[in-house]
Image (cartoon, rainbow, N blue to C red):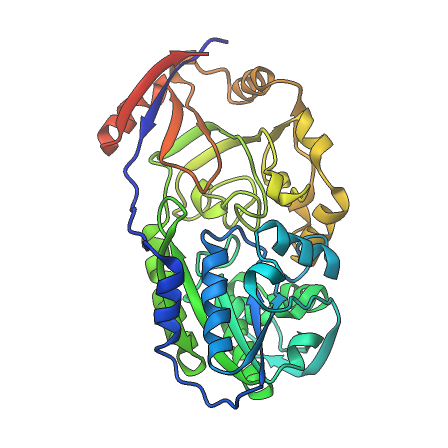
Length: 411
């Protein structure tokens, strides 16, 4: 089947920080801590592909070191990167976060200590739970803890607190054991409640100095850095999440028949591609409630190099290239999906040798609409949505959205 396509450019919010290192130093200087010289501080590092993470982390470490403290880095990744201490350390190296660059040690371990039990308040559908609070052993031995993470919408849960500093404190620093326990205790309607309760509990057990929240713009660049004292983490993160949602890029369509994604990966999103953007936050294979766009079929064409074979989220697509299945590290992918209590995210979609076969198959499953009515969209990934390719059926919608058409072609 021959499709006429065009490329268009959409204007995204580009507010950004010119010097992330200097901005980090400035933010950190606003905080006042009750500490003694020579004390240790564990600074958390994420598994996500955060823009400018090297200068940001260096700014935090340099501030603590110049304050007379002894900072070190801990991977706060739950079960990510294969769920081993060495693989998580290697992921930080791959991001450029090495001891020589940071000027401080990286201490990685999957061992946890249980700091106590957290009783989660019941709701109308779930009875009260009492769960062990796992916490990274190395971090628990530090005199202080400081969190660094990006604030953004969670890919499965919604609320005033979603993915960010407090989630890292609870799940990231819980390592694989803690992440597994929490994901089984959490349902969508009490995600924020559990995070708040866990944060309150942990702050009574450890010396949490605060955190640095990172918000990125529509192009995935650093838009805002905000240092928060521990006492301000909750309200501060709520405000940062509100901003992050405003800056999040969108697909400018109401309905798409087939979305082809060139690459997915853990550096893009926890589920490989951001479910908030493709309208599948609450159901793996369809939009529910007021989610937009409505996307009938999703096809994955590749994995990012940074994901190192972790294809968590592949099960949310209906189709993929056969070459994608050969790239997958199934141990990493299954561990991630099981720990997150999202087993379907690791299931195998229908695979085909070529993109053309995928397009023709999707066309058949959708009732074989006339080619000129077949709504197909191509994107690089859900972090890069400035330039998009679409089929002719979507031209009018693109023009009405105010986007600029830059090229027309046929495939």
